[in-house]
Structures are given as C-alpha cells and as structure tokens.
Image (cartoon, rainbow, N blue to C red):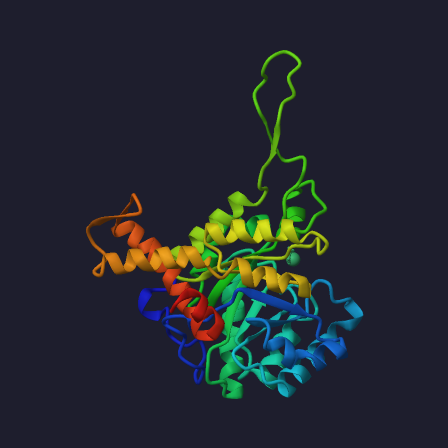
Length: 347
Ligand code: GLV
Ligand code: MG
C-alpha cells in the first residue's frame, strides 16, 4: 500500500509532479485511427477539428507485421500535426506482448510532450498500472517531458473487473477507464461474437398468461453490471468512465442506444471506430438542450444549493441541485469548446 504522503511523489527524479486534479477536458469520443495507414495520417489535422480525442491504435486490429509501422506512423503523425484542442492518445500493445516496451520507450522519447494519455489494454490489477507508472516517470525524466502522461485502463478481463477498484486508484496518473466488451466477453467465456451491444438471446420472458396467449420477451443489457461497477469505481476515485467500442457499423441506432445507456449511467464518452459513430457520440455525450435548460433553472432557483423548491410540479432539493450541477457543468465545458453549443444551451 502506498502511504498517503507518498501518493503524489514523482516516481523518478526529474519527472513532472503528478496531477492533483486531472485536467478538465471534453472527451465525448475517443476516435481510433490506424497510424500505419498513410492516407489516414495525412488527414489527422482535419480529423482533430472534428473529434475530441485522436487515438493512434497500436494494439488489436493492427496486424502483427504492421506493429512497427504503426508505431513509426504514430510518431510521424504526432510530429507533423497540430491537434488543436483535441487530445492525442495511443492505445499501446498489451504489457505481455513483444511490442509494449518499445511502444512506450520510442513514443515517449520522440513525442512525449505531445502525448496526453496512454490507453493500457487488458489491465488485470494495480500491478499493471504501477509498472507503466514507473516506466513513464523514468522516461519523462530522461526526455524532459514537462507534463505527466496519463494512463487510461481498458477493463476487458474478468480479473480486471474483479480488481476494478484498486485499478481506479492505482496512481495519480489514472485518467479513467473504458469497457472493452469484446475481450471481456472472451475472458468471461460469454457466448457472444458481437463487439458490444445487446444480444437477442439475453432477456426476460413475461409471466405465463392465459392458455395459448403469446408471451412477450424483453431484451436486456448484457453490460449493465460491468458498466455500473466501472462507473462507481471511477466516480469514487475522481476519474472518468467510458463505454468502449461498438462493432456493428451498419446499426447506428443500436450504437446510439448503447452509448446512451452508458451516458445515463455516468460515462462521459465512448470510442468511435468509424466516422459514422462520431456524430452519434457527439450527440449522445452532449447533454440534451431541454435537460440543460431545466437544470439551469434548478441551479438558479437554489443559489446556495440548499432547501427545497417546486419547479413545474417537481420537487427540487440539495440532491437534485447536485444532479443539475452535473448537467450544467458538462454543458459549460462543451460550450467553452463549441460556440454553437453555447448558443443552443443559452450559456
Ligand atoms: C476492446 O478493446 C475490446 O476488447 O472490446
Ligand atoms: Mg480489447
């Protein structure tokens, strides 16, 4: 156990001080790009104006014989591109893979000052975060990186889910975590070949009615338990929870439903693997205009956040004031980034 007084100590002489509070950033979509593809690299600047985060994916979906090209391509793209307000992340290869060490050493060495977050796949427990934490501190010190690079864990193994609470507070470098439904399904031996979303076989049948009457079947959310567990671990530790990938690019409606469930449960964003998902994530993870307007009325009706008032027949008190603050604060962050959103929200 790290004693409280040592928690925020840099892990290498000369490494930057860890963040006490993670930077406030709008991260509604983490947009995945394959950096070994030249025409994708060439469009990175345009992309950065449309998404909140550009992530160079080095892990799954990049063939083994393109791993080095993806790493080199990411470095080239990071050097050549102005990402403006968008965050720049990588998804490194898993710690037990032959590429992980060079991913970190080469990328931090070359573009450590531009890199905001490293997404760490297949995190099993706090030990995985501690390993990367120390390695990053050593490399930041060696290369004079001024701002700590943060770590984002993918929750995608049964052991990781079991240890989610210790992962969330493993280091002040923790940015947040994402649900990885594909690897998690495999790790748990779930019987689905889908990447996220529901399954037509997972649901409840209504009780038997009259003889011969048809019984309705309601599909349920396979990911509810894990998302709830992840959201609690993240919220309790002041880090951010995200829904991960939705693999059926032909079903925007189902993608939207999955993203929205996660948003309503507390997630702040999701991965976008296809351009069509960017608009969906932007819409879902920006609070609804009417909801923001109502939330503003609650906040204004109770300036010090205490007491009770009635608004449109609905009781408001200290707790609903806090709910309203969550929505108004998010809307303000988005409004700062997008003038059109400021207008929509009346902020
Ligand atoms: C993401 O990496 C997943 O496995 O779903
Ligand atoms: Mg995965």
